[in-house]
Image (cartoon, rainbow, N blue to C red):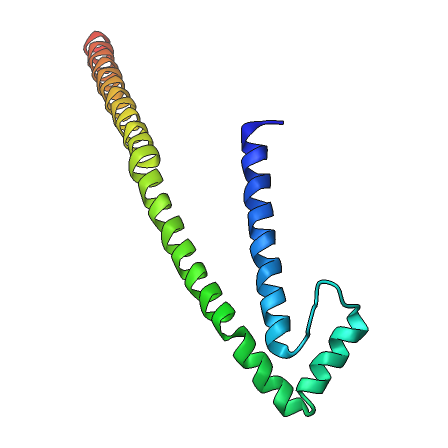
Length: 136
């Protein structure tokens, strides 16, 4: 297994562990007693006991997920800022010099082509003037 694959798997398992812990916390806040050892029906029963009405359930759900939602929003903003920073660095160090090099090469080739055209034009003009002089 490559080092990259191993690192990706470690990061994924860490994120999975964090998500599992967060889910357990939300379920506890909603009223589930022991969500790891309870069946799904028992968890639903516990949550219904703590939240008899839909309104109570929505308030509990909002309160239980508030921190998670704010953390996810913060993480998304910071991730996008980090990615933008990495894109800028990559552009500055990798892409910009490459484009400058291509522009320079294109400019040099264009200059060489212009020079060839000028020399060809001069030859054609001298050849035309020579043939005009010989025809007289």
